[in-house]
Image 1: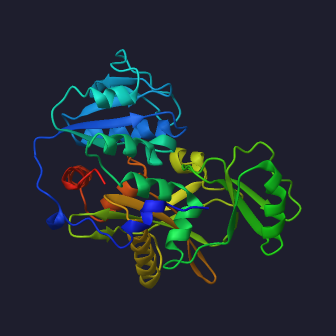
Image 2: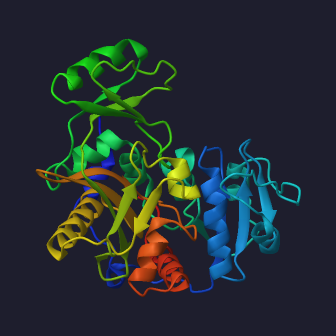
Image 3: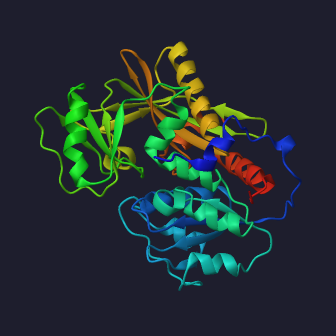
Length: 359
């Protein structure tokens, strides 16, 4: 598998404000949210939190069928139960596609604050659209986004700095049984997860003798299950290099997994911030998150997930556009670090506006 191509060129980079070109401070901020991903519900909740923190920004809702709606912040904030109920914009679409919207932007000096999660919003697709038009945006560049979104590729790029679990990529049903048998010959349990995607959807846990699922949408990652405490660490760029945020531990009830309902509906799990763990372990997790952020060449912010097993800390995955909802992990960590959410967003706008978008 070719992994990340150009992404490796970013290894070891850090976003440093003093090395970035000057920019205009009169940008028009557009919060882009929604999209065709099955994580668009989370995206709506992130956008609500963003527009609440930054009054005066524009909000564009990208529908699952591709249209773009200009949304009044009051209408967006009035939407209830965003994690469960589809958002239906009150105003008609202003553009039939996102590409046309970007080609005919009706504002001066636009800056896109990305509230997107999953699929084309997070895998580099939207980032490439913006880069091709020299439009600045928050978060990492397209090559980095694509590499991080591919779980196996991300593991390849960080494995010389952080321990990773054994895994195999399965791209068709004909490969599945062999991959499962292979890993179960060495490990008592395995986890099947979509190769690309997030929000803990599509996870399957198997032990020896369990029947594998037959309704998968490939490609899938078949990975050794690592038993232990689950930790997650956000990393933010503040203009002088990345900073690791306080560690969160995720406690999960017996016989449950950290799925969508656990993460966003509070069913069967607790998020402890800061984690009640030894200081040495907290520093190790923060150092690993920083190492992954830098190894992949992330910009702006990221969040890395880990498991602490009997033989040490294991890296699971990195998210370049983690949720920014009121209940999401990075906002919790920002609060624990004493960093105001609005100040964090302004810093992301500052950094994103300064970087050279075109490669």
